[in-house]
Length: 113
Length: 108
Image (cartoon, rainbow over all chains, first blue to last red; front, side):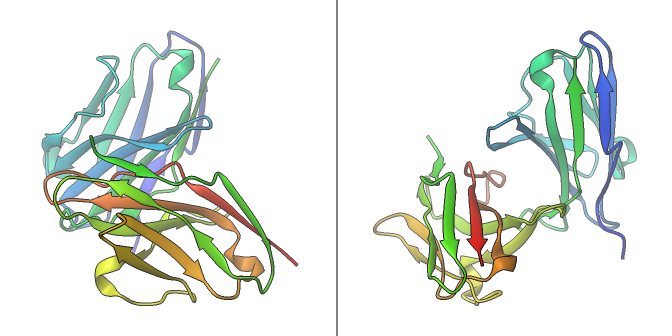
């Protein structure tokens, strides 16, 4: 069974540019989560989808971040325009139910120069 | 405010020594507690959850509601235990919250 996959694994962009990260959850998992780990800091929650609906987006840092999950399958996280402080590793995770048992992708490392 | 504290950023021990990774939490309600682990070049994965009361890879964790702690323990550390460990509370009306993590280094 395929696990959670994320693309790209690493992205290097300049400040002001746009980046779109993609996450494919485990098939059948209605719950999809985005987290990020900024350099040297803890893993912070960004948002939670249940199917195509945003269940909780309280962790989204500002309106430069836009997450979508059209059709309730894969999800994208767009950062536009990117700032230096957005550099970090963005993790996607999925679960069948919201029980705390999450399956993580390998992460997408974003470097903003 | 909901908070989880892992006081040690780094814990370095020798192979065969006992290990205890500390976790304290401040959470409303009765959260469920998890430990997640990330080995080098691997994805973050669930290690154990308090509700299952099981031992995984020799690790155990006891939930102490009085002290609001969920320390992770192993009697004899192995080199392959070297990894980043995250304590993570979860409650039904919110999502998983991670502590800052403790890097465990087990030397031969």
